[in-house]
Image 1 (cartoon, rainbow, N blue to C red):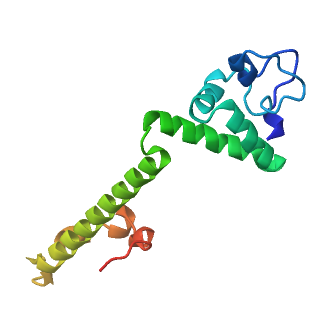
Image 2 (image 1 turned 30 degrees about the horizontal axis):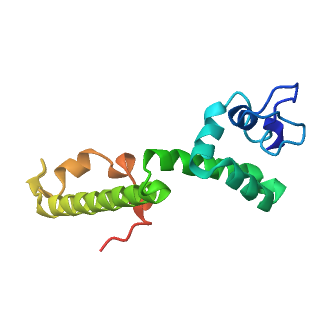
Image 3 (image 1 turned 45 degrees about the horizontal axis):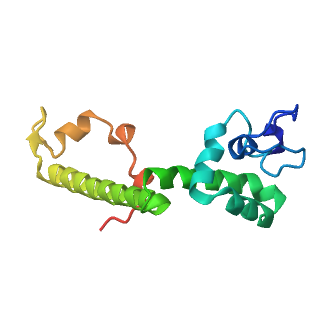
Length: 154
C-alpha cells in the first residue's frame, strides 16, 4: 500500500542502510523496507539476497509488490526459524494439528453418543429419562454441530 510509505526526507530506507549505500529517490526498496523496520530487510537479505529481491520486485507488477514483499518477509522469517523445511514445515505442523483435532472431535462425538445411548434414569413421574444430564443443559447453548459440518464424520 502506498499509504504506508514514509516521506523521503533524506532518510535512507532499511535496505540502503544495511547495504551501506546512498538511498536515491527512485530506490525500489524504499516503499517496502522503511527505515524504522531494519530487521525486516535484514531477514529477507539474509535468506534471499538483495540482488534476488531486486529481481523479484522487478518481475512483479507494481500493484502486487507489497504483497510479494510481505510473502518474502514471512518466508524469510520462517526459513530462519526452520532452515530445512521453512513454510512447508509450518504448513505440515498445522495440518498435523488439524488432524489431531479432528480425531479428538470424532472421539468426543462417539463418547457423547455412547453416553446418550447408555444413560437411563427414572423421572419423578415414573417415566424413563434417557438423557438426564443432557436434559439439564440445552446442548445447543454449549456448541453447535453445524460449526463442525465441514469435517467428515463417519
